[in-house]
Image 1 (cartoon, rainbow, N blue to C red):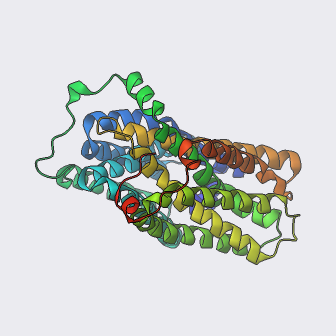
Image 2: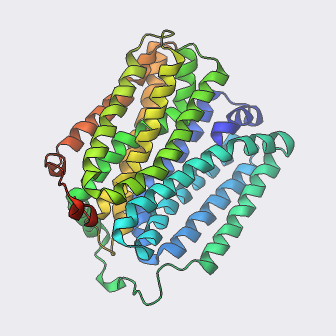
Image 3: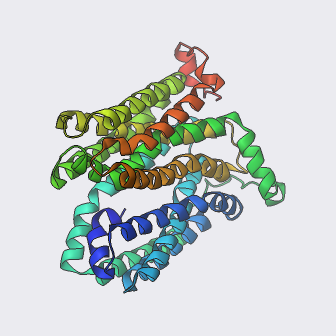
Length: 391
C-alpha cells in the first residue's frame, strides 16, 4: 500500500505525472493477479513454509529495487516483484491456518488475517509518511527490504507448517497442474467464492486503493483532507468488521450465505448512491456511510475463502484459494482501468465514472444469486450451528 502515501514522492523523484504513478500501481496489482494460480500451484507442492519464504524474498528484492531506483523503469520492476511476492503470502497464511485449526474455525482465522491486514494499512500510513520526510526515499525502502529479508529467514527457520504427527499430502498423489485447476474450479463452492470475492472486494480495492479520493474531491467537492478522512473511516470499519465476521460465522454457520447475500445487496446499493447522486450535492455523512458499507463488504468478501474451503481437499487448498482471489483482483484491475477511461471521457467532475465498478458488482451479485445454496432456506436450530455447512 506504499503508493497511497508515496505517490507524490514518486512523481518528484522520477519526474513523472499522475498517469505514470497509476501505471506503477496497476503493474503491482497485475503481477499479483497473474501470479495467483502459479503461486497456488507452487505452494501446494513446496508447502507454506517455503512458499512464504519465497514470497517474502521476492518482496524484499522488489523493495530494494524501489529503494535504489533513480528512473521509473527499475521502480516499475520493483513494484512487479512486490506484487509477485505478495501473491504467495495470503494463500500460504490460509494454508497454515487450515493445517493447525479445525475446519469450522477457518472462516474466523481468515477474517482475523484480513483484519490484521487492514490494521497494517492504517498503522503504516503515518509512519511511512514521516519516514519519507525524515529519512528519505532510499533509507526508508532499504529498511523495508532488510526487515522483509529478516522476516523471510524467521519464517524459513521457525515456522511449523502443521502440528506434530500430521502427515503432508503425498506428492505423488497430486494431480497435474491443469487437472488440479479444473478439479478446483469444478467445485461449486470454488465458483461461489470467486463471485463473492469479486462482488465484495473489488469495489473496496478500487475506491480505497486509487480512485476514492479523486472522485470524492472532484465529483463531490470535498477537500483533499476530507476525502482522505472518509477513506480512512472506510478502512477502519473494514478492520473492525473483518475481526467480527469470523466469530459470527463460527457461531452461526447456517447464516453464512444469507449474511453474505445481505451484505452484497447493501454494497451494490452504496455504490449506486456514490455513482448516481449528482456531483457536489451529497452530504458528507452519506459519503462516510457509503464507505463504511464498502468496509463491511471487504469483511464479507474474506468469507469467500471459507466458502470455497468447504469442498477443497488438502492437495489443492492453495490453488482453490488462488482461484477465489482471482475474482476480486481481476475485477479491481478492470475497475481501475475503466474508471481512468471514464474520467477522460466524462470529465473528472462526474461521479458516473464509478459506473463500471457498479456494473461489475451487480454482475457478481447476480452470479452469486444463481448458486443453489442461496436459494435454500437457512436451517434453524443449534445443531445447524455445530456442523460445517457444505456449500
